[in-house]
Amino acid sequence: MAWRIKLPGDRSNLFEVRHFFYELCYYDRNDRAFEDCFDHDVLRHWFAYARYTGSEVSFFTTNSGLLGLGTKAVQPGDIVALLPGPTTAILHRDERESHRETYKFCGLAYLPNIVHLPEDELEEREFVIT
Amino acid sequence: MCQRQKIALGQALRFTRPRWWERAWVLQEAVLAQKKEVSFGVFTVSWPVSKELVLAIMQSSLRDRESLRRAPASTPPDDRHRSLEIPDHQNLQHLVDVIDYIDRLNTAGCVEAQSLVDTLLLTKRSGSTEARDRVYSLLNLVSSEGSATCSVDYSESTQVVFGRVTFASISRLRDCSILGLAKVDAMAQANANVLGSRITRSWIVDYADIRGWPLQSTPRILFGPLRNLSIPGQATLDRPQSLQFIPNTLSLRLTGFCIDKVHSVRTFDTDDLLPVPRISSRYCSWNEPYRFVLRRCYDMIHPPSFRGKLTITASTGRRVSLHGLHSARDGGRQAVHPPGSCRWGKPVGGESLVAFPVAISRRVSLNYVCVHLVMTDGLKRPRKSLRRPNKSWRRLDTVEKTPEWPGV
Image (cartoon, rainbow over the protein chains, first blue to last red):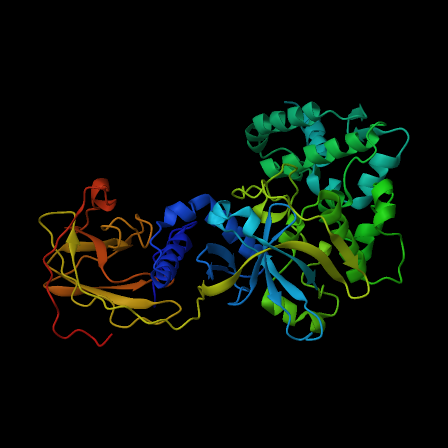
């Protein structure tokens, strides 16, 4: 018999998240503190969102070293796009349609350091989301 | 409070029951009728029902709830008393929203009172068997916008109708945050063809299965579970304006900024087989006279429940209790498990081993594990100060290495 040391309404998943975050930071040699990027409020919202979409929370880094929160549907190579409104979305390239470039919507993303992005360097593109 | 008043209060609460107000035809009646009068029990209230009245009813019901519960047993059982459940704050907010919505629609000057999506979210729990009716039943309520969005046409599939509505929201608000209501589960996408009735397109919101609630304040996300989360620094960016809905392929064409590509992803999965880091046996104590050595901390760790056995030597008549497990990562402060969880051991006799089966919910860093153990005299419960690890607890650095450490 296994005993589960857990209280009702515990927040242990948040602590696990921290662990995965550190692991990711280690790979990227990025030594930012966890609380600098994702405070408890953000994580709480994000867990609710992931549960709503029927998925789980995941962390990702982009090629330029940005850290972000996404859902389990995010894969390496996906595109982080700024869509109209306060929306950062993850778009997955649909390989099945090779004759045209279409994307699948893979959920919203939360990038805490997006404030520091230089606005004029962003690439404007047209997306067809199916 | 006399019997008549109780019954009246019960009827009043039944009137304010949110489930009733989420039905589409109630909204239709309330908006489109020429003369409105709401009767419930002995009350008759002419429209507009003020929000203050509803709040007053709720407050009085909260005040009288205890007195109602304490009604004598001789009171004849009355069905109406069963409806006296008190709606929580969220439901109350919903009711206020509905009344607010009806009032806004009734105001003559307010042409574009509410969007179609807001009305859809307002009636999200309406039990229409035909999914398209969720949209079609509301079109006359939001006639100016609704006719532009779509017309009643049962030859169109549910996907097309829902797609039009999603696109209408995006183009009206210039905001893609409604995509936060779209289901992105990979399994759901894969099973979409099997289920048939499910939405297959990734960006189209399934309005037959929404639980979000709109909140009108930019630059926050408007819909879904993220609606109260402020997004850092994105309101300043100029957004591109090109938006197009292609009905044949059910796709959304828009321009956006491409930030970057995803480099690496870490997810956590309960069924994942994980490498267990090297575990060193340490012990800690909050209580100077009693020291415990963890002989074998976690000999085997099996996901997903990660169960292990924790063994302690205890002497006669002592009672050992395990109060928490801590990873010593942040100087010992990080709690792997919330403090206060307690497993009582039985009083032991003789010099014997007390074994605590422990389980870790998921993967944690087990490089250094501190265990909060308290040993007391036989039947005595440990002092409260001992049960809770305070901030001044010390981790002892003396480590007794176990030579026969299991090969982890």
